[in-house]
Structure formats: C-alpha cells, structure tokens
Image (cartoon, rainbow, N blue to C red):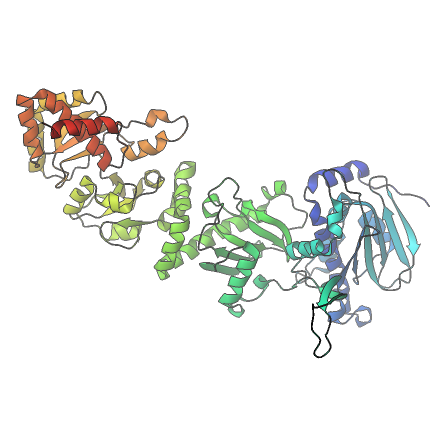
Length: 632
C-alpha cells in the first residue's frame, strides 16, 4: 500500500496547525460536526433539483459513537460523501476549502456552509493518534477509505460502505501526565461539548446514551426500587437558535430562560436586544443587560466578551473584540455567516467584519440604554447602580476620548430632587443666571448635600450634583464642558457666588485681619495655603476650599494609589464664615491670647477636614486640645 505525502509543506504546516492554531483541544468535535453538517447541506441542496439523491428531511442526521474499550470516537453523517478525488483534494491538501468552492460555484446566498474541510478537519489530530475516514459519494458505487497517523502521510484505498455519506473514526491518544484524552470518551462530556459548540446545527446530532430507569413493580409489591440500564438514542442539539427566530415570536419568558441558562444568572435581564443587521456584513445579535454585576465583575478574573457564532456554530465563547471595556457588562450572542470557523484570536483583531460588527454593537447598546433611560427610569437606575461606575471609568479612560459616547448615559443624584437626573436634564433646568454645573463630593450623596458650600450654592437657587464614587470627579474632569457649561466643585476657591458688594466686604475684612489670619496659617505649619474669611459657607462656621485643579477629594483618592503619595496633600485654604459669631471670637483671641488662637486654628482645621470627609491627621491631639479648652 503506497503512502502519500501531504502537500503544501505537509509536516511543517500540520505540526504548526495542531500546536499553534488550535490551543483548545475540545473544539475538534465542533469541527467534525460542522463538516458533517456541510456535507448534508450539499446533498440536501442537490435533492432540490434531483429527487433521486435525497432523503426525507427528517432522515438527515449526524451520529456520534464512543467506544471506551477501543478508545475511538466516530462521527458519521448521511451527507454527500466523497470520491477518491475529493479525499485527495480535501484531505490531502491542508487548508483546502471545498465548502467555500461549493458555495461560490452555486452562487446561492441561501446556502450556508459553516465549516471548511482542511484546517478544521486536522484539529482531530490534537486528540487522535490515528484517523480513518470511510466515505461513499453520491453517484458512486465505490466507497473509499482515507487513513493517516499524522504528519507522515496518508493512504487512500477502496472500501466497503453501503450507505452514502462519511464516517470518521478517531483513535484517541493515550493519556499523558498533563493530558487526559479519555475524557472525550465519556458520553456526558460529549453531550457537554455539543451543547456548548454545536447546539444550533440544523440537523439532529444523535448518540446512544446509557441511562437508568426504575423497574416496574408488581401490584402491591414493596421494597427498595430496582433499576435497569437501558440505551436511549438521543438527539443532543436543539437545532434552532433562539436568535434565528423573529423577535416578535419570542416571549420575554423565553429570552429570560435562555439568558439564565446560558450565562449562569439567577435573575432575568433588565434589557434584551435582539436584532438582525444587514449590509456589508450580515449578522444577528441577541444581547442582554444584566440586573446585577456577577460576583467577579470587579476582579481581575472577570473576562468580558460575547459568544461569537458562525451560522449557529460557536467560534469563540468570549470574543472580547466585540465589546468596548465600558460596555463589558453586556452578555449575549453574535452570529454571522460571513465569519469562518477557522478564524483565530489574532486574526480577529484585524478582521474587517468583526470591527464592523463591534462598531454596530456599541451604537446599538448605547441607543438601547438611552431608550431604557427615557422609557423606564426605574429600571435604568437599577442598571446604573450596578454598572454606572464602569461607564464613568469609560469616560475617564483613554484621556476622555469616549466621553461623547458615554456622557449622556450618566445620571446623578442632586440637591433638587430625590431621583437621578442626566446632565442634559440638569442643564435644561438651570436658571439663566447660573453659569456652571455645580457638584459636591463626599462618601455618600447625603453627606455631600450637607457640605457648607453645597448649602451656600443651594441658597443661591442653584442645584448641585451629589457625587460619592471615587471616579466621579475624574469623569467630570474628562468631560470638562457639557452644553457650553463648565463643571465646578463647590469647594473650589473660585466659587464666586457673591455680589460685588459682598466681595468688597470680604476683601476688606481679610485685609483688616491679615495679621491674625497669617498667625492662624503659621499655627497650621503649612497644612493650608491660606486662612481667610468667606461669605460662601451659609450658616456653617468653617470649611476647606481647594486652591488648585486637584481638589481635596481627588487628592485623597490619588494618594491611595501606589506611587501617587505626592498627591496626598492638595493645596487647600481654611475658610471662616465672616457672618458667624466665631469670627469675632477669633479677633478677640488675636488681641488677648495668641496661644489660644493657635489652638483654635488647629481645632477648626481638624473640624473642616472632618466636614469634608477627610481623615483627621491626629485624633489624639485633637481630643487633647478640646479637653484643654473644656477644663479652663
């Protein structure tokens, strides 16, 4: 028997394909089932014009058989089969695509060829030491056997096979220290792989499966139930993907059950996006917005991605290239017949179709979120509480280049109402005299609303955004300007809410008490840039204001990050309410007891830090100073 050699750099290419192109060994079964489906497609297509070669539609099938003793897995189909010339061309030349030629030759867009004999078939060598293909083609009275043990070549001989179709027998490799090939002989494992990768192949995938059933008892018989083992021929795939059905034909309950079963959630999704896109790239998408973040969402173990299919066959379980990071919470499926099964992670990044699909997905997710925001604010608030921080990170990341995509998806609590508002809603409700979008930051929205300067802004008739996520102020800084309005922190030193007359009064008070304010500043030993009187504190006696771009809140957050210790102390000023009776007490102390004035300065600074949500630098010292005053 003459052994033939593989063409096209046989050994090198086959070795490279097995070890590099496919790193996930379990996909071998997906590849063979896809090829079998293609073969049935060809026979069925031929039968549309030649009834003599066809079967009843329900008789087409793919059969899987596992033999643990022989260590073989067999994949058989009743498709078009192959001649010896087909075997030579399709299996003798690695990466030859007969399926692609078939589709091209027939020039029929309704024919869907999802596999490619060639690279996909050879994935079986990842788990097999020997492969035997027995096949009989339509219009042929002779069957042929193709046999190979890998890179050393193959043989083609005549064989006995009564039925038209192809049978592929894989002899599994022996288990090694780090590889367990025997797992693929387990019926449960085979069922698992078919459900994962090939559940939506349009023809039934059948397998004999052993199961136990209780024996019938005689009437009146008692005792422990007895069971017998029987073999059932089961169809392992559902055949019709839910996303291939019209959205109008699928109920909310069906969507919810599909989502929970496939994406391991116990709750129904907040939003379902089901649509078919046509154009230069055709595909279907079925996407879901969850109610809650998964347990590992904010951990390094979380992997984003959408399941990517090619006409019902899974190519990739989590295709990260289809989702931007800021929409990484979306789960779902994209199915495009324009993509080949043999696409790799590396080629995905340069693939035109994938890039086109990803851009479309981004637009669709945004439009659906905006629709939910407008039509069902209650649901949107549930979504935002779970994933709003991710949207804000998206605004801030990459130097703010995604802000136009995301800024209208942000919502905030404000001092004016209990519900969340968008930036547009905030700006639309601004009085004409308001020039900036005001915000306040604290550990909670409630604390932010109680800040001295927040209340001063509210007293002027202006609403204030209440921030409490660490990323909030950075996100607003990345947006910078919204609807021609700048953002302004209420603790900013240039808040500028006063009339000219009020400004003059404060300026005069600061000039007249310059020595006292300098003495207080000196007592704080450089912890503040200045101490001054202010008329922007409402009824509160004291507060801190920021002197530069980095606010006290931003400095606190930045200082937690390794290497950012330089941001621990933002430039701040200690402000004293010019209208509060405390100001007169301080003036009197400056005249009569400068040492006690120094004590007051330190206590007031500690109080101001506490009000701003900052840590008190030395709680013991503060306690001692207060006790000292109380015992006088």
